[in-house]
Image 1: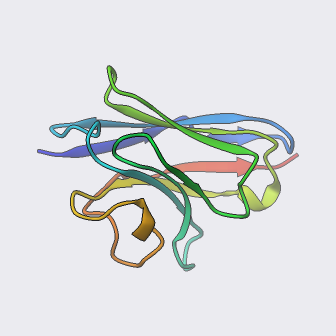
Image 2: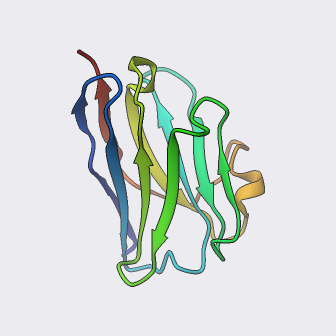
Image 3: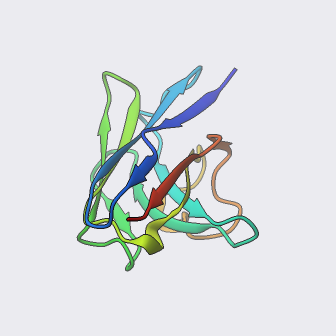
Length: 126
């Protein structure tokens, strides 16, 4: 059974940092692209970042570029999203996903991702 599990969310003050983890079981993330997304309840899913299957390419949305960094630990079968200089507008549920058939160049397209995690809440507030 394939499972993606996000962790690392929480409450942080504006300007603070968090590191989210996306760990997989029953499936290797190592040869697949992995994307991070966020969504408010009732809102559309927003693509945040993606790392290519060979780690040779990364994507970031304009709203997080320069503040967030995506990386991969192949030994741990885990992808991370390091978030710095957090803002209240970064408050959301964050999800990771992987897609066996489509690369990061399409991760912004609805329908991308055939395995998803359950999400982790990030709240940025003073």
